[in-house]
Every structure is written in C-alpha cells, then in structure tokens.
Length: 438
Image 1 (tube, rainbow, N blue to C red):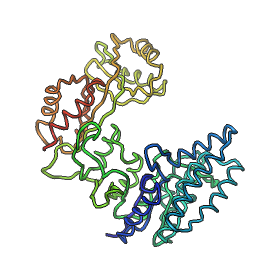
Image 2: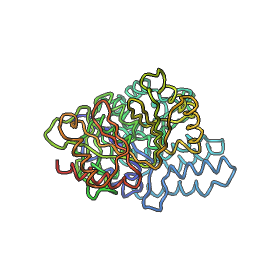
Image 3: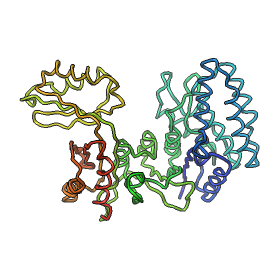
Image 4: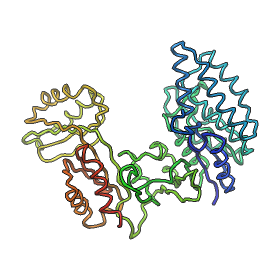
C-alpha cells in the first residue's frame, strides 16, 4: 500500500495484554511505519487513566499536599507493563528524571504529557524501532497556539531520517523548549499531523470501537455500521455529539487528502469506518448517521417588521458575544429569529440576557423554551433524493414526537430538529427505523 500511520488509543495500550495485541496488529502489515501512542487508559471500569493520575499528582503539588503515593502508583503501572512484556524501555531511569523535574517545579503540561512519553518508550522497545520525541518537532508559539505549517515542515524533515518510529501523542513544545499539550484526546491530532507530514496513504486510528455506527447503540439496538463517511459528514455528526475521533484530528488529514480508517484493537479483522474526502456515490443508504444532544435553551424573538429593520440580528448576536456565549443555531422567519444555546454556557445568565434583548431590540415578545434537544440527520445524498423530509417527519409524527424547531444547512447535508428532552431517544429511534433499510 505504501506508508500507513497508526495511532493507538488509551485502551489499546492500557496494559501488557493490550500492548501485545497492538504489537501483533503493527507487525501484521509492514507498511505500518510510524506509530503514535496515547497514555495507558483504563484496564477495567473502576481503574484510572494514567493522564488523570498525573493531573491529580500536579494538583497535589500545587497545593503542597503529599504526592508520593500517586507518583508510585503511576511508576508501578509502567514498570509492570515493562516487566510483563520482557523488555528494557528504561522506565526506571525515566522516572528518576521525572522525579527530579517534580522537585524543580514541573509544569502541568509536562506532567500530563509523561503518560504518552513513557508509552512511546515502551512501544519503541517492544517493536525494536526508533523512538521519536514529539518535543521539538510538534511546535507551538509562545502563546501556546499550535503552529501547523511549521510543525509539518519540522516533522517531515525528522521523519525522513527514520525508516520506522514511535511518536508519543498529545504534546509538543514551546519555542523555549517547555512542553505544551493539546486538549485531552490530542493524540488523535498528533496521528493526523504525522500522517500529513509523511504523506501517508492511510491514517489508521485504533480504538475500542469498530468505527462509526449510524446511531448511538445506547439508544438504538444494534445499529448498522457506517462503512464510509466523508469529512464533511463526520464534522456534522461530531458537532452533534457522535464522538469517536477528536474533532481537530480531522483537519490535518483532510488537508492532505489522506483517508482515515477507524479500527478496533480488540477486533482487528473488522474493516471499521473509512473517512474520505469525497462523498460516496452509490444507490445505497440515503442517510449516513444520526446524532444529537440534550439540554439546550431556545430564545424565540418576535418583532413586527423585523425583516426591514437594519442590524436587528447583529444586536442580538452582540448581546451573546458580550456574555461570551457561543450559538448553536439561528433559525429565522420573516419577523422571528430563534437563538439556540447549550445550557452549559448559560449558568445563571439567562435572566440578564432576556432583559438585554428586550431593552436593546425593543422586541414585541421574547419566549424561552428550556429542556430542548437537538437531533441531526446527516447524509450527503439526501439533497438528491425526493421525499427524505417527508419520510423523516412522518416517522416523528407516527412516534408522537412534537417537533419544536427545524433547521437545514445550505449544503442540504443535514436536517436538524429540536424536540423536548423527554422525546430525544424516541425521536432518534423513529428516524433510524424510517431509514435503516434504505
């Protein structure tokens, strides 16, 4: 095939048993040249992720509380993996360096990154290939902003020196050499930027699920798998809560036109889901996926002759900006506009926001609808097929779901509806059942 970049998530590297599975996957295909690893995740439900323990350790340091017990738990976990695999990855020496840094005042990002760093050391030793530290080649500016093009150049130059290698995910460095991390889940980003830098043929992202499903299996029993999805469709579904891949990890691979293959470490023979640049032109399924989230508030504003009043919506949006509140959707009519906001951003600001809207816009009425849910039905082929909307709304009617809001993007790739929280699961099942056999 050429060059495959593989990224393995926390469950894939959680212990020696999972590490051996990961090794077998890597060694099954000689094209898997560059490996990106996360920090060890949970081994069982009551277990702790290594990164969570490291962040807890930093909190103890900050509060001048004893941290030695947490440090020892983390150290023992890595030493146990090293011993069980029968390798010498220099873990004890690495912890000596970390302990020295702790006493010198290690930063939060430095500590948080050590899970990936140590995981990288273990897999380089296990596979017998080069360890390539992300510090110095994954670059951030002095304000902590990721430098995409500078990183691409630095990574490309470094990777050319290695036939194969292991790169720890999640972190890079500032201009002064200090460690800087991405947001949580950032190893997905590292995998994508490595794939771009080496011009990989495929970026494989190995996790604990076999790709994407058409709907949430906690709501729909045994939903069908998504064989292929476009970057655009994935963005729509991810935004609405279908989270398998870190959202920012899509962009570097998309920029380079590299397909992403989501695979399951515990079921390596399953094909998983391919994320590709273009839409798949087939006679198959009309919709690609259904996703949604609960807990939104809709502020419905009515003012007579709104459409002829210059700057009305701008004034409404500036109020939201003043309160630092991002907006999910803005459905509108001739004399109405609705602002959809996730409850997590509102706190206790709603009363003040309503007061400001009434005062600054002189609206005739302002109504608030709380405990709302949004559901997106996504599919790049929907626009070309007749009767999709009719089928969707008929299914909701037959399921006795009252649709409180309808919004469709200009791309006609999705139909977003607003329903009450109590109808959320019923609505998703009704939509799925209507289109499942297409």
